[in-house]
Length: 68
Image 1 (cartoon, rainbow, N blue to C red):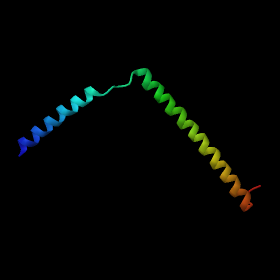
Image 2 (image 1 turned 90 degrees about the vertical axis):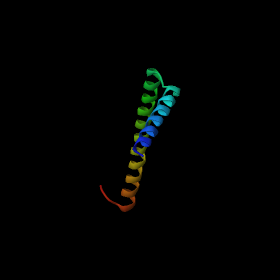
Image 3 (image 1 turned 120 degrees about the vertical axis):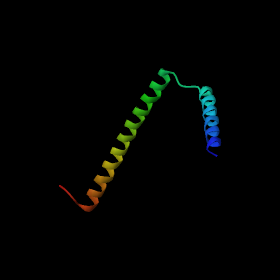
């Protein structure tokens, strides 16, 4: 039983190795550009949420008559 688990594990690792070889890994330039895009998109999303949050905050403040 223990030996069969070892055989299965070794077989699984061989299959993993074969699949990893098939993967087309991105170049450094591609990875850098994708990372930059993600950072910019996250920043823009953050600004959008800040804008929406500010509008909702001011609307509630106006409706409830809170503040100066």
